Length: 243
Image (cartoon, rainbow, N blue to C red; front, side):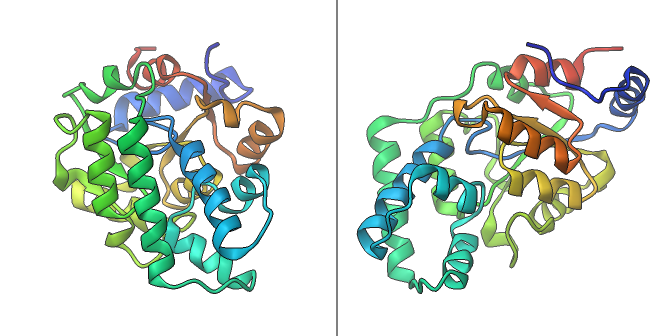
């Protein structure tokens, strides 16, 4: 299925022209974009919150309230909900995630490597995860030769996580590009919001089955995202195919 572009073909044409003239930097989120892992981490949160906070939140509730956010942002959300957590709590969450990926691995989405291996554009990762965990995830996924450590930006680099634009703006600055010349690939509403707030072009990648429902797609459209893709071939078509 080809990407769902803006309703106006003329508008879509001008967007494509803009891409061809201005696209300099591709900023990847990691979980749910390069690898189909967001659902794994959220499942871990469902189980961990139940065990340590005594709540009976299901996957849908946790995804709605915490999906696509860093653990530091999750902590803030929990605080507002009346659940206080400490550093030990989140260190144990990290250990659980590392154990999960070491046991089961991380599956790279089909087509992602076709884009990551492109050398004609700059590429980096900007994720809400902590740096140590992110570098480990990159190694487990087997893509460390495509993204250098200095081109990996994490929540450790900024004081505010997604949906604030800080991380994407930081990544663009470090990569030497203006926000308007950057394209962000995101799966979460928080990440898409951050990209839009940063003044970047956002591609919503909904390759994970957890996002392939009309309710979520409608929420993405309401954000004002012009490109919605369900596989990486669609993303590649938008980024690199000539008009």
